[in-house]
Amino acid sequence: MTLSLAAALAAGAGWWFVPSNSTPTFAGQAMSLPGAANAQESSAEATEIQDMVLGSADAPVEVIEYASYTCPHCATFHNGVLQDLKADYIDTGKVRFVYREVYFDRYGLWGSMIARCGGEDRFFGVTDILYDQQSTWSRAGSEAAIADELRKIGRIAGFENEELEACLSDSAKAKSLIEWYQANAEEHGIDSTPSFVIDGTTYSNMSYSDFREILDDKLGS
Image (cartoon, rainbow, N blue to C red):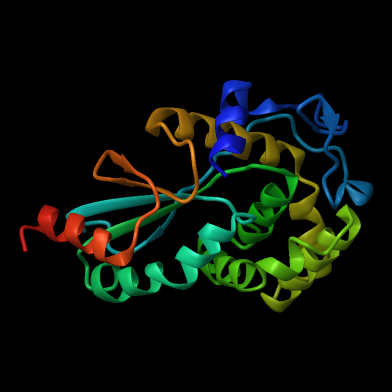
């Protein structure tokens, strides 16, 4: 994923949007949103994007993960290393964990819009499903098939059809998400996924033992 992200950032992520009642564009090509066929004209106003956080706000160490829902290495981290981090550091109040999305393609963006559909309370539960079923929905074939698989995940998470379509057709939200991702990635020098920012220092993907060594050093243990 390194070259894909580096190229995207070099081109200003390749994303730009025409007016909110028109089709968003990616790298100069139309990037229709899955729910756009049923959408009302959306507001042109930017949407405030919320960081999604696990752990105590008072934790002494902050870890920010940058990940894409279509990145296999991110799924491996989420289903493995993160579970150990959660048990040993996040749930014990030692680490505040922030998850930030990276967008290599429209499908990762669509996944993000599903994950964020229910706000912070449902975000990590939906994220679990997206990573658990990544090989199914991200390889479903056509755009329509991928969108339908994402809708299935949304329904499993308890969203009603109208709620899903509203989330998947929100071009103002999509624009804000992409601008948010660009600003974050540029600030922290993100050029691959998953990447991690631990108390302000950026690291590439690593094993749990490497994580433990860094965190224990910062915690003085």
